[in-house]
Structure formats: C-alpha cells, structure tokens
Image (cartoon, rainbow, N blue to C red; front, side):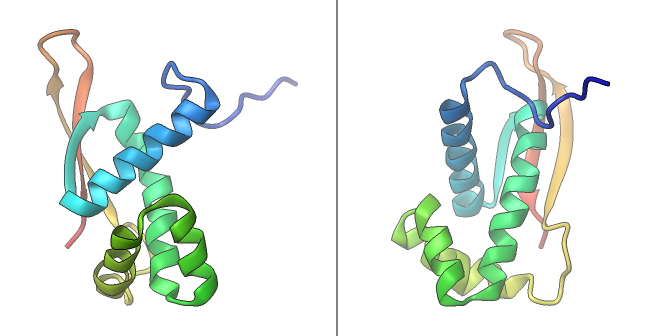
Length: 116
C-alpha cells in the first residue's frame, strides 16, 4: 500500500522549505508571536517545539545543534530566556489561533505564539 510522506510542501523545494522554517522560527522566537498562513503555522509548530526542547536541556550538544540553525544572539536568548521558562512544561509550547482569510488571495491566516 502506498503511503504519503508527512509534512506539507508549501510550494517549495526541500532546501527552500527548510530555510522558510528557520526564518519563521527565528521570527517566532524574537517576537514571540507572528502572523502567517495556517499551513505554515502548522508546519512551524513541531519544528519550534523541538528547538525549545533542545534549549531546555542547556548542555554543550544542545548549544551546538541550536547554533547550526540560528545566530549566536538568538541561541543565547533561547538558552537564557525561553528554555528556562518552559522547564516544568512537558510540551505544548506554542499556540495557533486561526484567523479569517486574507483579502488578496483568500489564504487562511493564523497567529502562532509562544505560550506564557
């Protein structure tokens, strides 16, 4: 039986999708709340949650893995501020709030934010 691969393609090639997720995650961690399309928000959620779980560990290996994706300033913020905020929480660091369609093309919009 043929099985589908998980995840959305978002009309992009693999390296462009990965770059898009990094950019969206960077914006989410800096601003703690971003407005994007619903599909992008749903793809961003597992990526961002894995990054926050890494930041919670606060060891050398986690630091190196985070540095592979983000700049030094953002890695410092992840380890110093965002990671400790969720020390007691076992998951569910993000929230997606669905909005109405965008006027220009009718794309479903959503707000993705970090849970306080």
